[in-house]
Image 1 (spheres, rainbow, N blue to C red):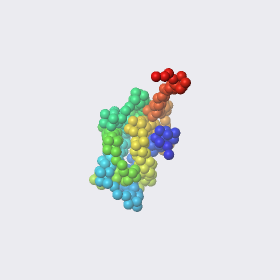
Image 2 (tube, rainbow, N blue to C red; image 1 turned 90 degrees about the vertical axis):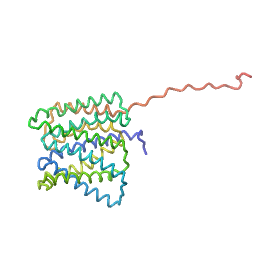
Image 3 (cartoon, rainbow, N blue to C red; image 1 turned 45 degrees about the vertical axis):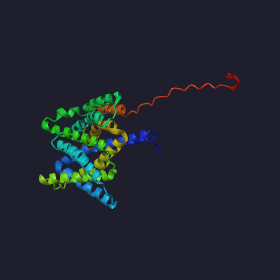
Image 4 (cartoon, helix red, strand yellow; image 1 turned 30 degrees about the vertical axis):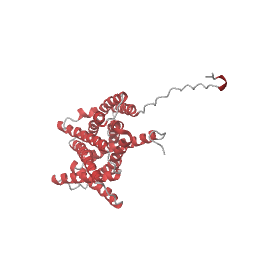
Length: 316
């Protein structure tokens, strides 16, 4: 069994990080795809109704008992990290904010999270990591900067929605790091999916949007959001957070805008501009800077102690 400093640990962390970026960014595409056939409230309600049905059944089959403290902690995390974050993302896309621009604004989460993690959690950030964060902002801006001027019909206040989503995820991240809940991941997702299903179902019913459309595109979006984005992306977010800390896992979010662009190209045929490709390379360089492990200091050689031979030892 390898420890966190073993030979396999960096490779496992890299694989988990790459899987997180791919699955997390799929949520923006699922939001874009679903918004073409249903409002955000309907999409989110059915996403969590289905997710909670599967997760709840699995929890019941295992006859798991959840302590009250863990229940309260994950209800709070679910409200912040699921309801607050996802409603801001989906409502922004619903208002016409492009998926790439939404990913850009949400990718500012690292610098906010790390800035707050230093005084609140006592995490240390090196000068190289701070330079990586600054470089990542530049790369993200290059990837989706063209979107900002290409959609003049989008209401200005719609851009406040992904800002609120980003801040909500920051709050969930710092709350989880501060309280350190110990519930297993599947049980945690069950609680969070349950509270999210209750809130979004109530919202959809109040706005008369609970009835799902019959369009196949809607259910394809639901499948992507439940299987890939939630069980994959959201679950991997907390796994990476537990292994790597706030600074390193937040840095991976810099890769979600270029990954979202790649998803958009595959799903909708959206072209990748040369400026976007340059931004991808800059984002990759930023993540490498932040995730690069410091070289352990080399201990100075110890001089051998001189040995005294009995025949040369002076008498007292």
